[in-house]
Amino acid sequence: MMNFVCPVCLRELTDTGAAYCCSAGHSFDKSKFGYVNLLQSQKSSSKRHGDDRLMVRARRDFLDKGYYGFLLDELCGICEKYLPCSARILDAGCGECYYSSEIKKRLADKNFEFAGIDISKNALEYASKRKSGISTAVASLFSLPLADNSCDAVLNIFSPEANGEFLRILKNGGILIRVIPLEKHLFGLKAEIYEKPYENDVPPAECAGFELLESRALRRETELQSNEDILNLFKMTPYYYKTGKEDQQKIASLCSLKTQVEFEIRVYAAKK
Figure 1 (tube, rainbow, N blue to C red):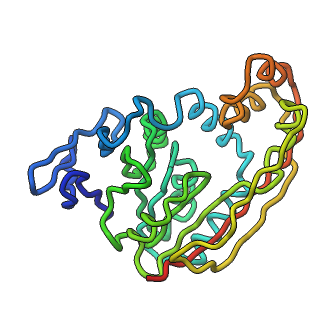
Figure 2: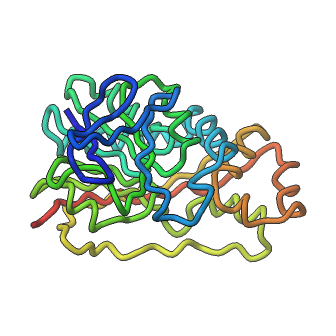
């Protein structure tokens, strides 16, 4: 079983049902949604952490329509290829646990054990509604509440690259599965917002402490045929929060949208 560790003393936490406790007497109550808050607030000056409720709800509604189903299919294939039965997997930056809960369900015969970490309480509230049985905690990816060498794999899907922490918690030879947007990802959406839309910068594949095993580029054109789906896509991206009312109104009036959807999946092995 994957156990969180105490953010104060680093001892293993035991799930007592209502709280997580360590042998030193530190205790962390579970929220009514089942997640535990292990974020040490004194290390952050921000009062608001992670994705807000609007973004989380929009992402949930969009993903549940299956628009990124082809990415999920590839992730299931990669997990089946690289991970052993009963693998312990951290979904790092799990959001509402769309990908991890679906992988767990589709590959039930593999008996994978997942834990999810996200800095957003809103995201973990929605994760609980999937009733996937995934243990979740509010924490920073740069200070993971997990023991050294405790995980077989890390999912890092559209979330910050905390490579040092990923290397610490992965076993030697453990797998890091990273998903990033490619150059023209959502270019059609950006073309509706900006006069001069820009392509995304793609980070290099080199990753200290890891060996790249394979990469897969996924490119499709997707057509959205309802204003609800278009607005959900817009609101789940940073573009919504970086535009004014005038630019937001351009999207609010659309009834159909064609846009490129481009991802790269990179699979690494930890080398210690």
